[in-house]
Length: 191
Length: 163
Figure (cartoon, rainbow over the protein chains, first blue to last red):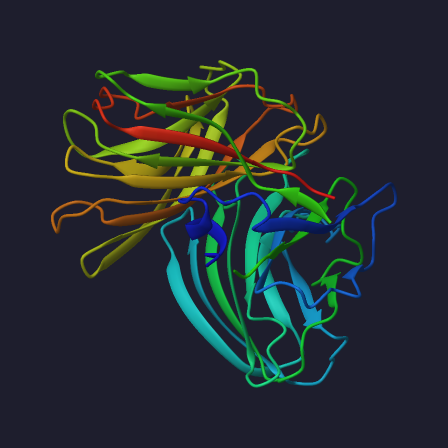
């Protein structure tokens, strides 16, 4: 039975357990939207692996990404996060009935050159039509300077019983996702 | 669909060793995953990575730690390794995602999680690390900065390929 995400790394994945579905590498000029469509229903779980930066205006050095499933823009999402920054702040927040799932945080226009945030997001039992969909993520950014580092755990809920067939990602505050950002979607097979 | 997630190499120590290195890493994957399970010979320490033999102060990290009911966060600036995990002389596990390691445009960002048992030491850590270098990563060294790794400790490097 496949095990997701970081936990999966602790086992020797059998060849064929973990398959690459599609990868988007953002080119020159950036991208306003990154989208995975026609996701096949042949896996147990999905994993999205990201490095990203947005063009949010300097001096801001962080931005988040919005994630929606099946182009649903209604207030059908909820999230919880555990947040820590490099200045000793640790906090938690939950938000109900929102129009997207937040992936926090990545670097932005005010960040150090060449620095990108990273995230690994697991989307569990994505094709099940009998329950809401749950996701979890670890993400972080660091720029070798005080007041730039953040590490975050997320959980997210999409209150829909539909199978997930598409994932749409847009910048939170900036208008584009910066060149050299990369989004790789994987499927984890069931036995 | 391309099949991926492959073990690249595993090292199981036969004797106490300060550093374990995976070298000549192919650039054919999107990400790498390093899995450590084992101990050091002395006490609580951070599990760190160095890349391409770079021992300069070109690494940093931001972390969150949990120990008992206490939680804390902090950072390393201009360190000689990216210490994104933890280990001890009792036990330790660290799993580190090395993201987009082969590109030659961006600095390299890594995400780590580690845990050790015991109520008097840091119990769990999650951290993000940065190597300020745009070179493709071709070697990964695992250190705890102070102590030898104990015989029997295991280190496995995986590659995850993309479409």
